[in-house]
Length: 419
Image 1: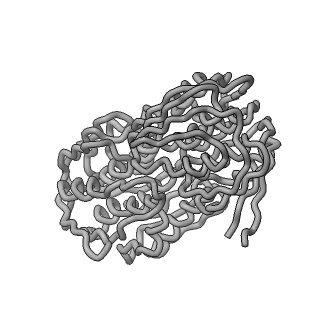
Image 2: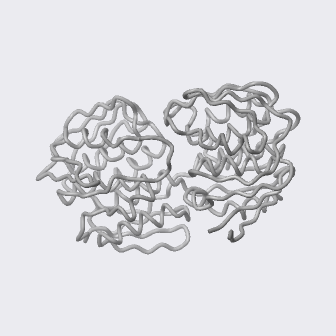
Image 3: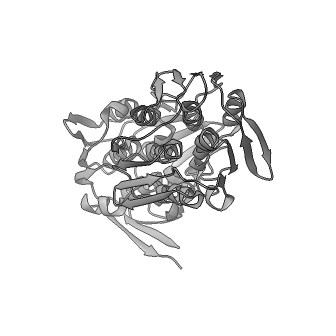
């Protein structure tokens, strides 16, 4: 077991580089199951979730070579279509192998997924969509069991936009007979990145990034060039919030401004100065942090993955703020930990009512998921005194070299063994 020790009160200053997007890398790796032959990805983030996804495919018979930020993977000789509980329980995104396995190998057995405890995130949307495409699906003994002689194109309507559901249907439909239309699809940049890669391999996908996506099935897919994974908008947003919370001045290289409009507008609301540069964003914060209200929404709205970090930031703002969480019903697990540090936050249903305090105080805290961990890093580096954070493994799932990057910005942070 490990812990992270932070001493707050020092402004973060300097430059930091953003890596590849975790939420783009995972579906891209899963999509290699669809291909005939090897594919290659660059700008691959060095994260525990990426390792887990590669291990899952290796267990199925895929071969891969991961060197720093470059991944070569050949999943064309898979001999198992089972995604076991032992791996899937650690990462929700493991369900992304369901669609490609079914499309390419006509069957799949995938454990009901685990991962962050931030809400139900039901898989019924995936299951009903695959049934519409002609698959037999049943949930049995904790596994999603599915098979189909051949998937057939159909119109799929999602009651609510689902990112992994949209990605699973895209992957399943690429090798289906006929045309599949996804209505009310997720519009996230990571969905677009997946579609762009598959199109470069011979798929026929139109409308990615809009509410309606059309996929014309093809007989086979083959990669013909290296795909560069998009930069991580959530990592970039986290460093922007860290800069504001510590009253710093940071240039964030590779920050994908085009995907960060909702986050940028809220940072401007709290008083940040933001300058968009050719290769990123420079953000500065002086004076009091102003209060603001936030409501999480599907992209292009304010991302739920940035809500915990903003909760920490607004806990030291001047005045009252209200955060409304519309995506996940259990995404306020960081609030009790922040109150241990002196934050004044009351949760009522899906609302967090925040009364800003002058400062937070260091305390022992525990992270319960990836973004809760990020929120506690924000709080710890802004607080007076020393903060010790447990649950470090959550952080490693979503942030590459976070301690090293923060130390390069003059932040006081270190990792230690915990007893």
